[in-house]
Image 1 (cartoon, helix red, strand yellow):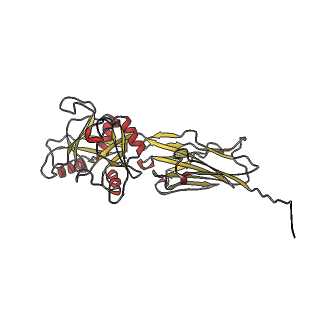
Image 2: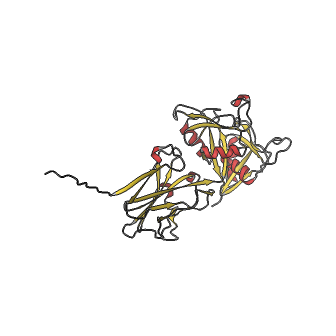
Image 3: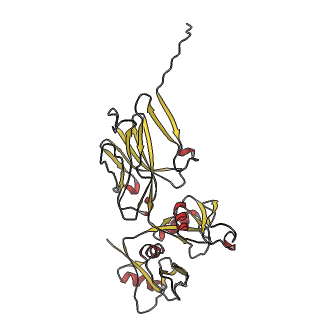
Length: 357
């Protein structure tokens, strides 16, 4: 049977794509919106694109949803599903954080017991994170699904803190990417992101050795161009070596740390100490020998100033100067690096850290 002049058109839904607002060049970060043709479009909105907090604090990542041209939160015909994920620094993965649907709630990994929805209104999908950890830094995606409709919003969680360059006792350019990550963790810090390094450069960080960043790139900040650091006729900026083999390539690392819940101090002791004696002296004082991240946090965030060189947990000897003066870093405020002395024979003071319960 021949049929002419008859056109069957079934229009089920309309889909369109928008590039991710933070990185439009990445195809995997395209946000797909779906809605029913005759219904109001579901919209998800973050009232603030960036939220600032600090380690140990609590924070609310804003996220609300509603239907376009209406004041209602949902259609009432479908259950609302809210999902929060964290975007990795290279944007290649999403890490599950929290999912809610009806009365069901589930949190994941290190977020278990620390995250929940604010739910101040029927359209409030904001996420509260308690006891902020260094690893919580990054971008989070709020996704709301109702039936065939779907929309997302992205919120960046920034932490107040300090970026510092780090190399181990073995010397310059001895860490692959994974060793660099662990080196930062060992010093009460995390590997820094490009955004954190960039902000540190804007605040005056100048360092001529290239270091790993969290996205796998290798970069270094220069505020005072000079011949050994890219040339004296170049402009200041963050120099980019690009992306290197995470297993085979070896560089230094830039670490990031934030405030701490404890007391950092120079131990008053009648004599100078070897490294092992320094460790024991802190333990006897009810503390532990301090880590590199802790001396940088105390210096940058608390203004700690002491002209006495002291042992730290990694076997290095350093001292923090917030008020430059003669014989104590006369030209700049900095954490001064003495080196990695012989642990058994060299004698110094010691910096300790006592955590608060």
